[in-house]
Length: 551
Ligand SMILES: [Zn+2]
Image (cartoon, rainbow, N blue to C red; front, side):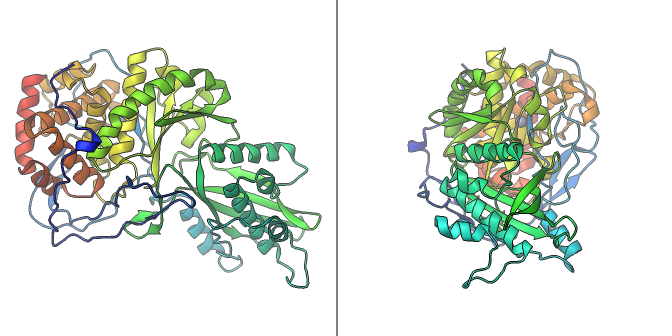
């Protein structure tokens, strides 16, 4: 136990610092709606409310940000969907040099992951498909929102079937497919498993089992919003089938469910299902489902794979995974509940209180599959942002379960990403923010111990005594070819940086800085002046000296 300042409990937090409006800021209203049927918890935070134009100039070769005059155009931040925030294996000390790093990579210790061209997934495909096929398709006919009262049974039956009645003209196959999906989504939200399965070919046991698994997983996870947006091919005259690209947007009741709005929110997370409908009797039903396996698209999600997702819910955390990993759930939940208690206090400091955390336990198969899979052997856990709705934490159970300290630190680190980054709509920074993203996650991950207790300390020491030590605390992330030792030094340096800010300016100021810079799209220097009362250049110099002294 070191002498770090105590974090005040949520109930006696200091009053929120007043934030005088800055003329260049654009204030936007909170974008997200409540999950239907869920009373809005008063603790939900307001939307990250503003951005300001970039007032810093960046010198890519130096690895540092130098605050300076001259406005830049506020641009859309580098895509979030390709990002994940990994934990890496603890390493034995190894001298490394990180000072002159190659261009920013996505995550130290992982292979560089290609960034998707746009932040939003799924829906981008819809737009693309719509443009390509607009001439021949019934595009957008299925912009179906089903977060309303469920249809009555007879209405649902009518919706699922294309039979003409006196009151209802014959539907086209595209309309029939759309109606079947709308009824399916409605059934999901109503907890009606048979209604959900009614959209699936009754003759295909395996497909129905997969859909049943999806239904149960989504219900178990607390699905609160589910809506398909479709692009539909004309019916294939020969096979009498209809191809449908269905983008399913979803929210869980413990996350936010934001509405999509330019420069405010990307809306709910979305997955894409490529469906084939065929005519069975008088109805069109799903006869084939293809989901993407793509790191770029972050698919498939854990609830889509057809694994029998099982859950164990504690006070603050829900642990989920395949039934084969269920034997580890108690161990993971115990560690996660402790980590959540620590993180809840920091979540209050950055004004991002969490209703509940979600931790997925991945066996070898799921580790290679969920969200496109991880192949880097050094990565043992990651936090996956679900747009600005919330975040999932995924653990490679075989890498964390045998060492209780690794398990505890890893979970506490990943939950730290959830509270410091989750649910934020970010418009600037990109992976240039990693020094603080990982630094604050290490700070929380090891809390209440300090960076001098971290297993990364010796890597930082080696780095700082090398000829290529970074000139700034805002160091650039190491490239994928730099080796795991470089990641260790980078994460460790970030940890020392956060420690320095807390010791020199106070823990409240550190978390104000994190909130302003990582969550509210403030630039580095304005965030520093507001949080610490000093220009960033001063903080940088002070902390580099402090770290050299302490490491
Ligand atoms: Zn991390």
